[in-house]
Length: 167
Length: 472
Picture 1 (cartoon, rainbow over the protein chains, first blue to last red):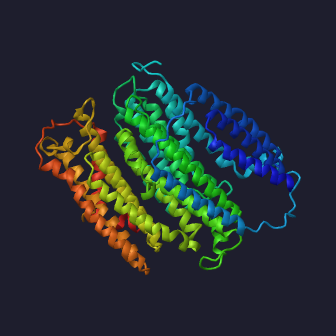
Picture 2 (picture 1 turned 180 degrees about the vertical axis):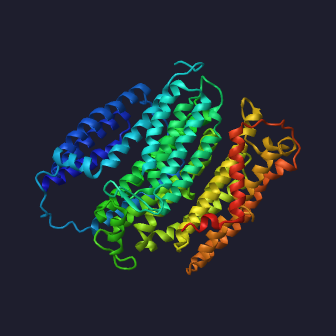
Picture 3 (picture 1 turned 60 degrees about the vertical axis):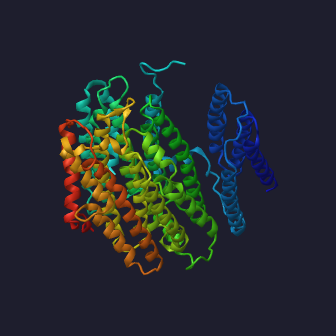
């Protein structure tokens, strides 16, 4: 339990730093750290496979992609804020309200005494595979349509065409 | 369900067809694919099936919505004219494939039984729309619209997903009937059950995500820019298929999962509905561009559809269905006329989409002028068109609800339809009264047939609305 508190505090802190860091590169690095912390939570929930996937896919592949893009676009220059004060105020009010609602929600939550038995096999690849290919077969297959659309679109939009400006 | 499989496969097939056949054939094949899907969809009529471990459920209502979506898709494909004959810069095979995939996503959104299916369907539809919005790569407005739509849509999806997660946390179920069961076990009123606040927060977040997709008022800011920036043919697709699917998905969720907590989502929805009607209609009055006016009109029609979702009468099924059908066919004819006229009269190398472009259309093109007039009358809700009965059914639903709140909504809705008459008559006046020179426009045969179908359907449904209304 103590470790959980420590991990949660670390997660929240690094997540906040993602938003508050001035330098985009730092933001990404904090985000990587946040993903590691979340992977720690997965371990505590007995979901080892998810932990591994989360680190490999998110912290590994996607975040590296982020870093590349940021380095390529050279975003280090501090662009002055373009938002008006009214927008900021509205955002703060809305976000604050949502925060209050969530704090209220967690206060009302009945967490139980935590004695519910978790099967030792819960987070293993085998049981995950059973769920994925038995219960959730249809969404699993249809997600491929989503990826296919995204791929076709990326190729279509990214292809250089005749008469286009070459950088 | 079979229609979804067929559409997914034919999307892939259509990509491969791009290698060999010419553009004309591609149009015909895609049209055929959509009609096959429509047939497969209708084959399940009067049977209630659960598919793949309760992932999807087809019943007559969902089949009807699917049919409206597939019909709109077929009509949009039919007016696409194979995307011109610019071999270098347009890719019809890809466009048709993405449209077919988008239709599959839309069908998932109206038949889902599991929240995961809603999410997957919504994402397929949205991602397809982001791509198609930006498909006119050399047009800066199109690029801007695509990026804007993508960023805002991604946030809306994130919010929706967060809501789904919270609802799952509170009820322990992704299944919409399962969620409904847990929710209905709550005590009457706003008393909290275990995890109640989480449930309520989740419902509101799901709501925001879906309202964004149907472009209801506080979440509508993307609509005019995206509708204007996207190529007109894809704007047509967006304002018919995406809207129908979004409204149907929302109705399914609210009527099956959350009727027990009507007090929670009903009150905000009343305000959202009124705001949508007012913002959509009043802003439409000030538009100089016909296309932008139609974008605002689509916002206001989302408002009318929300009224009947709110009213929750036994007639609601039929009313939503009739309204989305009437709205879809009228919108398709309006955009079809706009598309062909604006391309005929380019201004600065781009299609001229202002009202002036329509000036004097009736002199040499009486058919196009008539089609435009009927569709505008239908959108405004003038009797003897489908739009009139659409509005009539919705107002009847609102009136039959005992809650005094609905009288207020009705007053707003009726006032706003009166405002609507003003701006829907602008193009009609431009067509018949204003002087202008438009040479006779040659219509491809399939284009002409589509316009005849939409116009005839609008008039037939305006004379005999029972044809569709009594299907339940």
